[in-house]
Amino acid sequence: MSRKRRMFDIDMPALEDISAGKAQDKALEKRRGPMAAAISENANALRDQQSTEDAIRVENDRLAHELVRLRSEGYITEQIALSDVVTERLKRDRKPGPDPELDELKASIRDVGLSNPIRVERRSDGRFDLIQGMRRLSAFRALLEETGSDRYATIPAGVSDAAELDDSYRRMVDENLVRKDISFAEMGALARGYAEDPANDCADVDKAVSILFKSASYTKRSYIRAFASLLTMLEKVIMHPNDIPRNVGVELKRKLDGDPGLIRQVSTALIAEPDRNSAQEISILRGFLSAENTILPNPKVNSLDKPRRAKTTFQVTGRAGIAKCSASNGRIDLRYDLDFTRVDRAKLEHAVAMLIDDLQEEDDLTHG
Image (cartoon, rainbow, N blue to C red; front, side, top):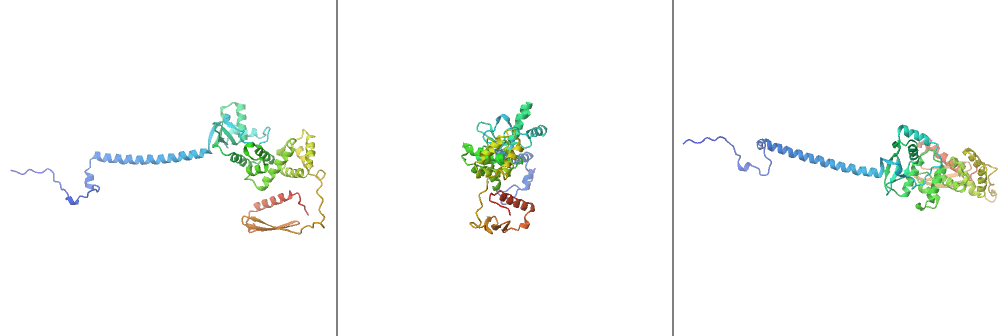
């Protein structure tokens, strides 16, 4: 009987040569069918797709949170209805009456649109409190009334969450401090309005100035306080407060402090010119600073009773240490741990000018 011939000769590896739990060798991989390879490739693709989707989801969540943060802080500009903007929460420092520059702003908005959005805060009733941009809002309202165009029915605005009242005032004031046309009278009026508002719990104008104009220099805050006081004294008779020069206002306030009876004289002189313009009003006020209208100074103490000191010495603490100063007639010396030759000349000149300007306004300063 003939032996049956085998169709396949298969070399089986020895049992001890097979590693349990290890990946298949290349020979076994090659023997895998096309269906198994396709399934494996599809599984790998699905895993890559899931990984990509997870990464996209994480990034979208991050962007969504960032968008919410930017919107809450007012960095995202939105179009809001003019009718939804409320302006009563903050007392404004704008002078009443027509704004001579409003027509220029309206023309610019008509030509190129609004380049600087207003800033508002959300209210619980769905409306918005105006923080910055009263003139821009007024221009849009005027254009809407004049044209009736839907283009001006909404306005670009940075919308932020409601803040504490003091913070809202600071945002409004800090923007206005960079305006070239804002007057000390406007800033003084704002401080008075803030102090008079019961919601602020601030009955003192000096404190109101410190809160609202914290970013301003000490000297500038003193000028604002002077104008706030001057307006209180002459509020009913001053017609052009915003045109009063700083030096005139500050010096006149000091005159009135020294002689309260002078308030009636100034008021009488202003009332006598009911049709005066700003230049005429300033001329009247300057007249009370001249020699013939000023009160007589206190008599000088006899030099035998109180001799003049030849020199005054004092120390002032600065950021770089203690400055040693000495002042005498026509001279002031300063010794400080700072190389003044390395300070920018314009900055140095400005500092000296501010010093001289401030000292010239002292009542007891005399010139040799």
